[in-house]
Image (cartoon, rainbow over all chains, first blue to last red; front, top):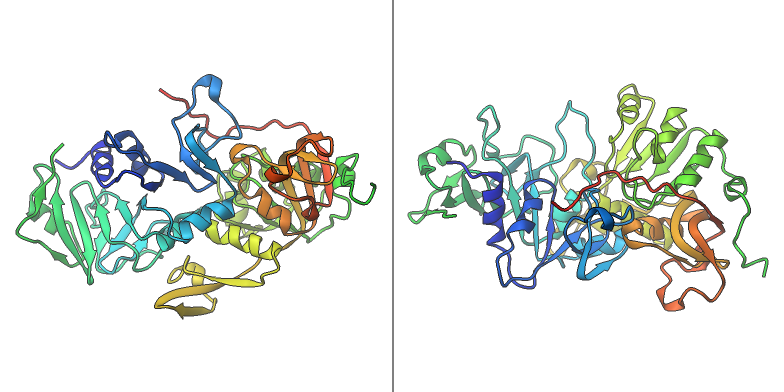
Length: 218
Length: 232
């Protein structure tokens, strides 16, 4: 069975380490905050200028001056700091964020990522995605392995305009966890009950399948 | 203390000198911390052909979105747009030009503009459509592109509190682009919720020192919320 969105978030959360500063993108990455393992404390960075994003507010706590990068009302946790957009991106571009999790349309075997622009459709902008992928050392991309029409999203070369080049080394899809090294995808883990054959069939880019591919458990 | 007293008595006075085809830098992120009354005054003035630099362009009927209604904006420099139908319509029929800029580069371009730095190298956007036409250079094995700074004829800013000297503090995440924009306008206008007596703001807590600020006005704010999200 392919992973659910919640299971994908759970799997990503296993990469969290105590003391990490983490930036979570919109969509599945946001759900990672719900699965922080017990005994681990992380600080969530929101690129509009908040380090230490807390839970959504209660009705009484709602404050128009307190939002996250998704423009949702949020609270600040104990130990939070608030600052300008320039300071926020100095953290991101200076490589101070320990883990960045974001979605994508395509990733390729050279570590390129396309996530912001589909030619012919309305282009809304890249927001902070280009800064995040260029500045972070440790990035996990979350996306479905193939499109609804069955087209692979793990390619030899991205077909869409790039968000960043040579910056992605870890990808979690609904079928597998893969790493990228030396111009190839390497299959590290498969979703419970998903065969290696299915993953191979749905990966268009070069793929190495080691002998010890782990079956994920939840 | 007339020279250092930045207070003005009306929104008309706050934007005196704003004319067609100028470049306006606007603070705010989404609808959070936007100078909503100064934007409304720009609409009332009816100036046209504007280049507006702001992370976003408001929504239909609020924030910078209202400047689209009478087609006052010619060019928008932003990182994320299209939260409003009017924007999309004017973009598609060619009435509006858009220069999409990565959010961190946009912040840094404005910061650099205010700090007298004409351009800087950044890894952001290398190898992407953003890099087209820009100088690329390698430092220590990594690739970077040259991004020019941004300055404006006017900077419009939303603060929380200010004193007569134009020292400003912001409230929570309504800070965002506001302190950057404040440094990069030839004329910087700040509207605040409260003008306090000199000495009331702690000098160690000032976000925008008064040297950057030309005009201060106290306003009333709707502070519309874009996505009200509550705890389950």
